[in-house]
Length: 262
Image (cartoon, rainbow, N blue to C red):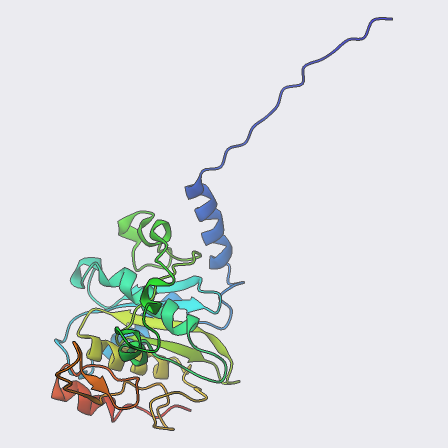
């Protein structure tokens, strides 16, 4: 009896990391992971309206990013006539701010990126936090630059990571008071960024914030301007431990007049 052995061909399917990224992006574009979050067009409209108000900065165009509760980028937008009208580096920073606000806010306690400034300084209660969750550079810089800030921005569908510790990032809470992600904006002074992020979140009706560390129940995660000169320290000392440096008298005044949370 003869036994015939047959060599069966093996079909190897190789999918590159960029292809996986595209598959992932298409999945999240379908809306499954970003349900209840602003679309790219909604983000752009709200961000543009906020940017066009007086915010106490340099009156510059902005980048904005929204992430979901898992830190997945759901929308990226800019306010200028094209992607070169705002600082190119601020695209990734806006995503980093969105990730930070989401990552360090809880259903019962919101922390804005502005609230983290003092706590992460040497000797602060959260020193080292800024190095804890590095930016995913593959997500930040992949794809065609021509798509940046569009519905198909290459960051969409990816986990961006990153920790940013100055103004411009806020947790987003829906009308059921659920924490559903974060929003980050960048492109002006850090104080103006905070004001613009706040107004953008308000316009998107995602500011049902439960509580925070600002000491103001009507604006729980607002930026805190209570840093005083401390000659024995490299930075000023914050009265409540969550302070942020001032940028201009105008931005400080505006922050105190921002819409109350819902």
